[in-house]
Image (tube, rainbow, N blue to C red; front, side, top):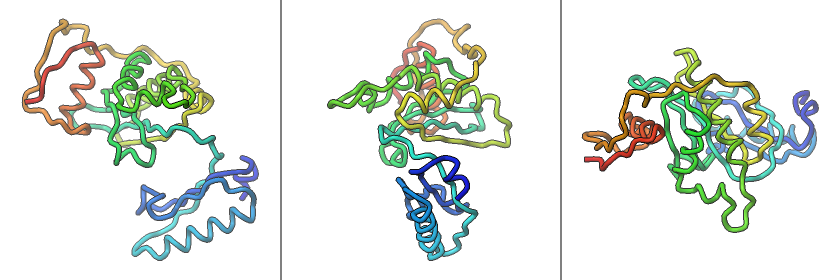
Length: 227
């Protein structure tokens, strides 16, 4: 309750359970909570719902400021055993695993490489203001992705993965990355401009071969078919 009072209503409340990473699947998210009484009722309802799940435990609740509604995005990273830290950006938020509209690069990356990731997305026109929607600040999003990739590259090996779902507002994007980042490592300094064919790699977006292809495209190489 103190957290909600400090943040100011309305707030978003999410249940914390180690058995459920996708909180919305078990009714563990409540949005636009307007006051203290509504917050108590939301927590009690979510806790009661989760207790009916076999083997589920509750560590507490996460209270966050209610962000303006907009286009949901995801930024995350995982530590691949072969390529090391790999940064991901895409559309979808809670629907990211259904839409599967993401781009991948080996971290760290520059803002210009992050911009290329955004342009690779099938839903990129939504960022440009399709169907009367307001255009998003793509440079702020690219800066956020780049800075997140610097964090991924510097993260201890004990951090296998992390993700975040920034809103489409410029304020959220710029606040998340206010520090100055060092120069990104360039992996194409000794590689001539050429056409390459991926032989024996997977077309799955989360497999190592796909990560390598995305990283090479970001460095300006043109890749051929997957055989």
